[in-house]
Image (tube, rainbow, N blue to C red):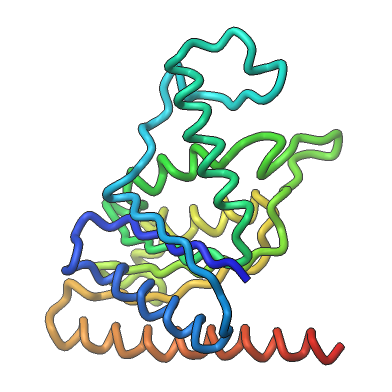
Length: 216
């Protein structure tokens, strides 16, 4: 089993989402011995945002006539989408920045959202091509949105990630959430404790599913 571990927070050691992904990956490895982990830190190694050279993706004959800049950008997109497609499990650290996700994470998504690789347009509409994976999103939020109807409409973080991974055909998208982490030390401690319970539950649920599949 291959696990792709992605962080996107710019806060380094002070990041809550990085702590959540670290704990999530550790629990997953404990429940799934032999899992290999590949790590991608988008705060340190993010692709550039889409521009005239990187917009679109070209393979085979379509790659003829590209400029040197386009070939370089094409190679970056190919590396990232191949890495994503090769993973069985993807753990994504996604803090809420201004009601959405970090631009580094959005830049990565823009590179892997490739027609013919992660989705296709058909006569019946779009079809995801990257199904069969498990995606666990480690979500951190300064405020509380999931249980507050008055603020739920501001969530363009978790809702977007569920939508885009679903568009890729991934039905198993899970969230490990720590919210209210900017509402004082007590609230942060409570949020992390709740997230820890969810992390253990997710890893245990996946392990039970794996054992059931082996017995089937």
